[in-house]
Length: 293
Ligand SMILES: [Zn+2]
Ligand SMILES: [Zn+2]
Image (cartoon, rainbow, N blue to C red; front, side):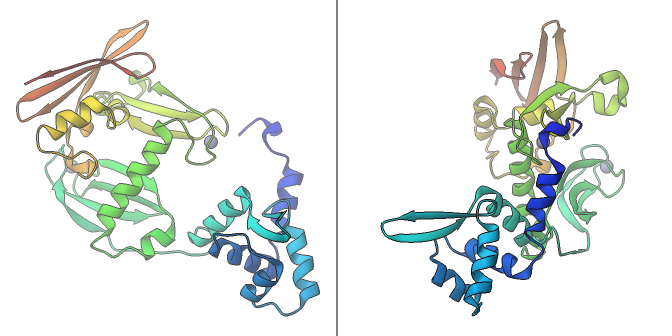
């Protein structure tokens, strides 16, 4: 982030300094547990804080930034603001306070490049699916510690797949995973990457607000498109529930540039000898779709 107008460091410091007190954190956690607005006395009892004056002071400090005070029908209630929900959500996810480590585990699927079994591994808060032999990394995503902790060993591949798909979808739908800012998509400069990856037509998704970048491939942009879903369904594959690493085509050559000005891209998907051909325009929208059965 380079434009300093996007945040005021003093205002950020003041907001986070509100959290430097256990009572306030306790109040936020209590509100997080409640769906409905909480009255003062309910909240104090729930938080287990007997000193009314002390409780009132700390609650007042949070109102406006992390807590919303709302009145109506003769009562006053307290709820979390959007910022309050986001910050307590991060606390609950263990991102600030927990560390976990797990053994890597082998998956049933094999690498599209060398046919060796794939493995699921967790390092530096990143879960990834990669080849045990050639180290080709198919999918990688930041995962909060609590998600790892509450998921059993056997369920972790499925849970991670849903998490990765959800994170990827958030970005490809145009929202930054980090700050929810608008995301633009561009083709990666094919001259700047190894041929093996150029064959996949990698794309870079860039947040126009915070500058974060994300990587995918052209095939990843069409995973949720109706022609792609239907083509898989007609071949007995439910694309919504099949692990991405079992769909080999997104990790093999599946796209080529048809023209550069304006940009036009051919995408092909082959299943059981049948072929779905798509044409994408410069916005990566599908403008032609033709199955060859
Ligand atoms: Zn491999
Ligand atoms: Zn962003």
